[in-house]
Each structure stands twice: as C-alpha cells, then as structure tokens.
Length: 463
Image (cartoon, rainbow, N blue to C red; front, side):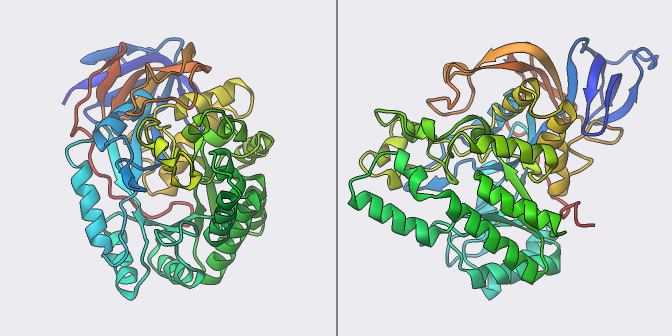
C-alpha cells in the first residue's frame, strides 16, 4: 500500500478549521499534524498551501439512469459518478425503484446491475417503495440488514409512485420498528393533477405553469401531513427537495416540538426561481423539476433554514434530461416535460458561493454537503470528515479560483447547464477517492469500477 501526504492546507471539517498536514496510507487517513510535524516522506506529496483540504462531498440524492415519462435520465452510473468527482463529490446515494406489483429485491438487484463495475466513486442505495404491501413491508427489514436503510415514498405522481396515507402510515410503522428512515416526496399529487388538468383546459401549456399548479401550499400541506403521520407511527421523517418557505415553516415547527423531522434542499432552489421557468421559447423546460422552482423571495427563507439547521442537508436530486429530444417531449403540454435537473457536478461550488456571499460559514458548508448527509444515512465517520480511520476521500479546493459554468465544459451527460454563464468563486483542484487521486491538473485519472457499494448503518441522529 502506498502513502500520500497533503501538506500545508487549511483542513476544513464540520467541527474544525486548522492548517495541517494530512497523511494517507492506502485507502485511509492515518494522521493529521501541524505542518512539518510529520517527519515522514510519503510516496506521493501534494502541496495544498493556500488551499482548503475538505472531505469529499456526499450527495445523498441522485437518480442515475432513472426512467421517467418514457425516457431515461441522461447520466449513467459511469458518466454521473465521473461528473460528481469533477465537482468534488466522492459518494452518492441513488434510488433503486420498486415497480408496482414487483418486489423490492427485484428493483434493488436491477440497480446493483446498473452500477456494479461502472462507478468512479463509492455509492449507496435508498429504496423507492412504490407498492406498500405485506410482502414489501417484510422486505424492508431484510434490506435494512443489507445496508439499504432508507425508503422513499411519494405523496405525488398518482398512478406511478403515489402512496395514500394508509400505505404511508404502514411503511412508517415498519421503519420505526426496523430503524429505517422514511424519505418523503411531499406534494399533494391528487390536488396537483386537478390543477394541471384545469390549466391545460385553459390552454396554459408552457413550462411556467408547471410551477403554478404545483402550488407552494400543496407542498406545505403534504409536509404537515407527513409529519403528523410520522408522529403517529413513532418514526423519523426526512423530507426531500424542500423548496417552499411554507413547507420549511412546517419542518421548523416540528423540530421545535422535538419531532425527529429532517429536510434537505437543493442548490436549484437557492439559485434559480420561477423567472427561469418563465424563460421564453420553451427554454423554461430546462428548469422543470419537482418540487418546482419557487419565486425568488423563497430563497432567503431557505438560506436562513440552512443557517439555523431547520434544513439539515443540501443534496442535488440530480436527474438530468437533455433539452433536445427529452425536455422537448413536453412541447404543448407541460405535464409531459421530464422532471429533473443536472446538478451532481455543481453542488459543492454553488454552496461555496453561499460562503462567499455570506449566507453560510465555511464549516457549515462542509456540514451540509459532507458530514450531515454521511451521519443522516449511516456513513459517518467513514465518509464526511477527515480524521484518522476515515476513508481518504479528500478534495484540495482553491477558494479563490473563479469558474464559469457552461454546458461546453461540464462533464454531466446533458446538453445544457442550469447556470450557463454564471461565474462562481471556488474550484476543485485535486480529488482523492479512498486514497486514489482521480482528479488532478485538470485531468480525470479515475476509472469505472473504482467505486464500491456502501452498505449503510441506520440514521445516526436517532441514537
């Protein structure tokens, strides 16, 4: 096994901020010390002077190769994990899908087959629970034992993923028994479908109406309902891709009341808005995702929620569809636009821009992007920090370099950038995945199959 030393950088974790040398032996961090205190010459020496040395990002919400509306997300596990690495993310957690009438095992096995031997970085799985039956409830316990410890349910998408309140309650009860964590897509899909049908009948077919029919109050109502069901079941709750300040208020109230209610938001809700959905000439289709983008005034509330820990995690919900041939399926009918945005490569830089702009601190950046998702989903301290015994997933980050986002230069397999022409401050220089340098000097040095599957423990905030 080879040794590697990272010298003279500012090591940032959720807990500490210190100039230090980091010593790696094989796949693990073995020591941190004051600069020069390690009287040791490593096989590989990296100079991080003037740079941050941060844990690799943990993106707890991606959808590689996800089927949606007759097409598939454009990124495979190979292209998507490579793009993640370019952006300083070294762990993803993706979502196998249970089909209605089929077993959880069948869906999980299909995703194992998609990912095995393809990934540039390490990966874990949540499980989408689309058909709550006695059989699938029993399978939940089996999957928890295999390290798939979180289960996603949908209050949206009737006829596809939707579960009614009774099924949700049953799944929450099983999660409470087994230590599993229920992840909830909280939107009132029944009401949304009524509003969508009415909008189309009025001739309102453009992408902007996707945001109008998925009303913020319908996100807030579903969030409130999910919290109450979780309380009745005696189970924790994690609300995914929260976008509306009214929904955030429901989470904040629950947390103040001592409920184990957690929520994530995504960079698109912090930097994009309904102004993007309303772009002319069908350009707004590029920004169709669910939950939808909100008016710009919601952004201040979300940043405040990130500062005060009402929002615990920033994930991407990376689910990219090309504009040409995929988003265009919804010309003349916004309900047929594939829902999802590319983001796995841009999350770390956009959140660092939040540091530059004074929205969050440097340590909070690491907490939201690395440490808390690792703890939330049973991977800490193997992932999410830099400490002796942790995996050597490490990023050398230049906090002063400017970076202009563009589809011409990103590595995601999608033909547009949500942030085309936007300049952010801060850029990845070098990326290690389990001690192996996979990005350096503007080159990709990794390989498919380096990434391994991560069986996960249960949520570490419930112990």
